[in-house]
Length: 114
Image 1 (tube, helix red, strand yellow):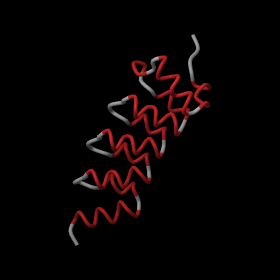
Image 2 (tube, rainbow, N blue to C red; image 1 turned 90 degrees about the horizontal axis):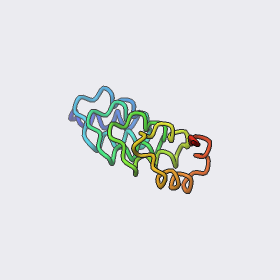
Image 3 (cartoon, rainbow, N blue to C red; image 1 turned 45 degrees about the vertical axis):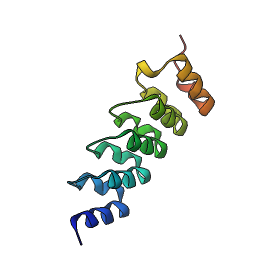
Image 4 (cartoon, one colour; image 1 turned 45 degrees about the horizontal axis):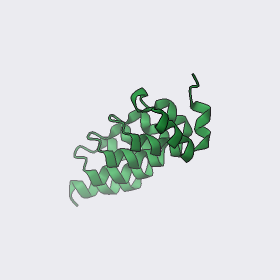
């Protein structure tokens, strides 16, 4: 059994095993974050696809996303309205906030009204 096969088996059994994997591949990371979004904090090289998969599983992990995009933020807020508090200010345009409300009405609880 190769090291990769051992790593794959470990990550499939428990996504948190990713933090101990020396050679993280996109495949290993994707398997881990789809099951346990919080594992994103241990991903060495984040890609938009990995971040999107992680926030779809747990919107609160937006806090670990190094490069937020509107798409990733919308997915996070759709999964967990509290994630709106984690969205960077430059992304929170009026249009973005309206899209958040369309996806998850509970977002209204986390909007700052000026």
